[in-house]
Structure formats: C-alpha cells, structure tokens
Image 1 (cartoon, rainbow, N blue to C red):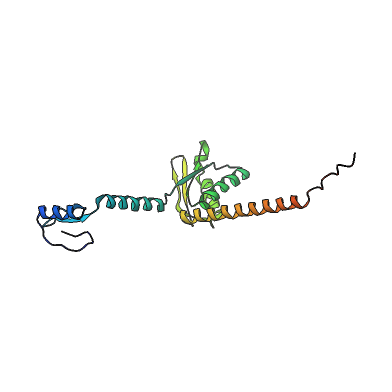
Image 2: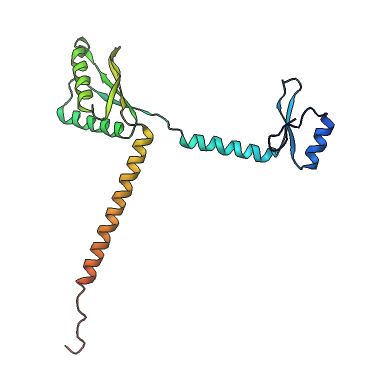
Length: 196
C-alpha cells in the first residue's frame, strides 16, 4: 500500500487498508491490480479525477489542429483570376494551414498535363517565402494535385495574427483620441444672446 503523500506503507490486509482510508477521510484506490501483491493508494479520488480532467483540457487547448485548405484551378486561367487564387493561397499559408492545389483538366486539356505542371510550379515559386512543396504535383485522373505546407507553425501564425490585431486596435484607439482632441480644440465659440 502507498500512503497519501507517496510514502510506502507496506503490505497491509484489505480490512486494515480500508480502516486507514476511513480514518484519513480518503479513498482506497487500486493502482496496480496485476502486481503481486496488488498495489493500492490512499488518495482523494474526486480531486484526482478533477486534476486529470484539467490536465487533459489544458493539453487540448495547447493542441493545434492542422487544416488542409483546397484551391481549384484550371490550366487556362486568366492572369487576374490567378492573382486572386494566389492571394487565397498566401492567406492560408500565412494562417499556418496546408493548401492542396488542384488543377482540373477537361476534354482535350487532359492531353496537355505539362500546362498544369508549369502552373503549379509557378504558384510554388510565387509563394516560396510562405510555404514549401510538401508533395510534388501528381496526376490523379482528370486532376493534378500538389500540397503546400506553411513554413510557420499554426501556433506561431495565430500568435502573430493576434499581435497584429492588437497593434491595429491600439492604432485605431490612438487615431480616435487624436481626432477627438482636434474637435475639442476647434469647438465654435458660443453665440452672443444680445445680438438679434
């Protein structure tokens, strides 16, 4: 048996262990039932369960879920549309998410997979400072797929976004304060009641 502070009590009969637990107002918990002899510990079981739940909750809070965002393109994409799609990829990678880029081929475009390959390479080069190619372009039926991974971890990206948001809020508050002070200084003088 193990005592409430982790000290070894020794081999004790079950009745004596239960009596000791009742005297100390604690629970007798079997921690190693397969051991010879079985090991039991005196503890406050409710407190133990609560602390275990809090540790699990804290671990979940610090855990980061990786999300895969998907962008679909066509081989004959307009330059403006390409810029828009590239902007989405930049936003996703900046947010710490992976991006799956899919090029969809239709009809005769399937006979020209090199167009899609060049487009994916161009996109990878354009966003090289934010992400790296995790899986090279692969033909998958009518589609060609490439996965980009962010260079920053999700937690770093989230912390940076929070910091930027806070700085922007402070800047807005400062600008509002300056504008408010300016309107106070330029307040018009009250009109004279004698005129009229």
